[in-house]
Amino acid sequence: MAKRSILHMFDPMPNNSPFDVNMALDCDFDALATYANVKPDSMHRMTQDVIFSRGPKGVKQTAIFIGGRDIGVAIDMLNSAKKSMVPPFEVSVLADPSGAFTTAAALVACVEKELKTKFNKQLKDCKALVFGGTGPVGIATGVIASLAGAKTCLVDHFSSDAAQSLAEEYNRRFKCNLSGTIATFDEDKIQLIEDADLIFCTAKAGIQILSAEVLSHAKQLKVVGDVNAVPPSGIAGVQVNDFGAPLAHTENAVAVGPLAVGNVKYKVQHALLSSMLTGEKPVYLDFIAAFEKAKEILNS
Amino acid sequence: MNKPFILHMLTTAKNLSPFDVNMAVDAGWLAAIPYINVEPNEVCGLVQDTIFSRSPKGLKNTGIFIGGRDTQQAMDMLKNAQKCMFSPFEVSVFADPSGAFTTAAAMVAVVEDELKTKFATNLTDKSVLVLGGTGPVGQVVAVLAAQAGADVRIIGRELAKAQQIADICNQDFGAGKIAVTASIDADKADYIKTADVVFATGAAGIELLSAELVASAAQLKVAADVNAVPPSGIAGLDPFDNGKAIAGSISGAVGIGALAIGNVKYQVQSRLLKKMTEVDKPVFLHFEHAFAMARDYIVAAK
Image 1 (cartoon, chains in turn purple, orange):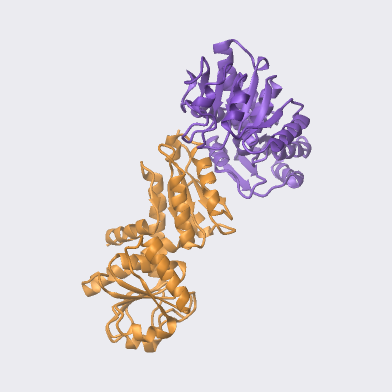
Image 2 (tube, chains in turn blue, yellow):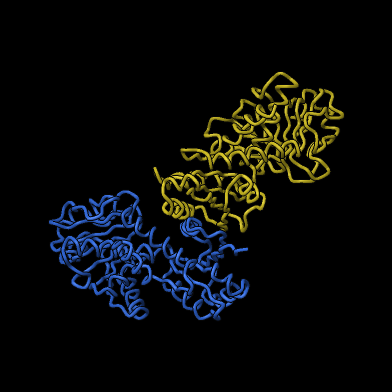
């Protein structure tokens, strides 16, 4: 009898995310087991318990998902899982803490696409700002954009130190080139966005970060992407379904809205989850794999 | 292809109740996923993770169950969950902490049915005592009986606690439209003389109404007891009783035991869990819906 597919969902938080649970079951995993409070130092033991209980054939129908809220921790867990495999006892692993990797990958890929089709530019030609840049989606967005060559700055609402130290930490970790700054008041924001080409908004849902008045000061703005689906939009004038629609209050910038990003994110996460069951060889998937998949989906 | 039915089960306790998990799976939910030690302020995050990961169509096959031990907290979590959603990203939510909502609903509905069939009357203006009434089931029994028009008194071991629970019943659960009163256990011998209905909702294995007090209840009509562990909460009442005359009652009162209540409770919880999988518009279910379902079930079962 064919083995049923099992996804083991490891999460360092006190609970798994319902988001990941819905996605995994929608991806045709037969059974799903949730494990909360899994810390990086228990990944070795947990992973070996996964691989040694099903035989070399059974492990092809077995996979690990790593969730949580902290992308550094998730990457540590992914690396630890990878090191714990004993071929042919090995399974695929996907890390997507808070959906941050797939959301960020979709966001950057959508913005990159608009940049290319509407302005014939690439990320490496651009200065990018990530508002709400110190949360999981913001950091992952920053890392992906920076690795693609954009001059990228993480912007925090409250603390310049927090933004800068996170930028340094992730520069060390992923060999990217982020900077960090603070923008609490409209004056700060106006100064920052005057020469920005791209703006990503990954701040808390339901809070408007950039007003129409602030936006009107962005003279070089080309594309904005906003992942906030709870009204009001994070960037004034962005509609949830926008995908390249002109952005009000700007000269010629276009917008990518949360449902457009969400649609691509959904496809990316679905494709990555599926790829863990279909391939002959185990795969280890992080935000780089997610970004590649997002670009592939947008180009198809 | 239809999306699998997923029920996200939230509890403030350190584990789900296996009772609720079995009920959910038997009602047609494919996956019953636990979220434990959930703080009320974490509900919104969990709800938004739930609603943003499926299409509006897929969300029809998605639900949230709220368990835990605390009735007031469960109602707050239900309200929070509802507030964190917006059309069309919505799912049904069902709160039933410790099974108290469905148990209380079954208990009151069965008693109401006995009043109707054996005494040709209803709960309106009846004098009702809820013994051991400060626990989750007792609170909700008091609220439902009061909402049905009864004059309800919660009896507890400490007056201050009983009074506090009565206030919660009146203000929070009853929205200021009911007036449940409270008394101390030591005074129950007085109140039993004029009681029409008694609900025993105390801890298992404690006798709340002695044979002597049963004999002094001159106008008692129906007595119900949720306790299935001997001795029963009401002397002379057996867990299997379902409308049987109580030995020693001078007023011809009938008794409802834990198993008769449990049977209806099971049906109510199962039907509400099923209803969540069937509705086109999301529903937000608590004790009032459980009571309506219990009444419907009792009528339909005849």
